[in-house]
Image (cartoon, rainbow, N blue to C red):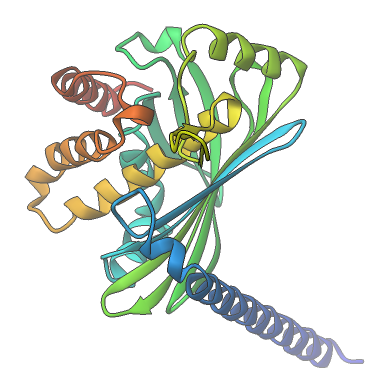
Length: 302
């Protein structure tokens, strides 16, 4: 075969492969969008009747080596708003840093590019102000998984974390459900070995003693609610904190740019105080001051 004909054949094959890949990706996104809408319809009762005072359903799972929390929620924001903020290949990683810093234990977040990939450098620490040198640094890969006109899925993942924890995943998928609303599914999970299990047991026996999650059972004789504790309570609290951070970030987007930061901080804290049994940790002014200081440090520290 002549060189020019061979080049033409190879070019045609490449174009066909790219087209097939694009069609396959579009089909996968369409299937996942349909599946998430089916989940929305199946959770009608749970979303309408729950103790959260919002359309939200939370479940958690514990195995011998993993913890996972899932939140399904209806959000009063158009899909285009959510998609533009959290799935944008350019602005998305930096916006995720503005989301994550709202969490009490996130002390710093910086988005950067590593070749064609985006990386979030995140420092985890205690629920008080502290020097970055006293915190634990984790590298999250930011990966847009699927994107369609009415659906997207994005994943933050880190191979390792503090105290021998590993395989961190924050996965967000959303789908348009019409009426200017979006259905969200958030997963927060991580794995751990023996050292991680021992560290969590130590925390739960000391600083975390008495802390509970959201899953509850009612005592048939007394009628009293009993909330789940232990490591499932731990993962439920943090899954809720990340969800409320997403909600606070999106809610502030309608405000003037110079007002958004203060609004995000105030909205996140006020939302957590709706669930004081599970989420209250610090006073409002202490939180606002701490987060303002951490945000300013985030603009300069590397």
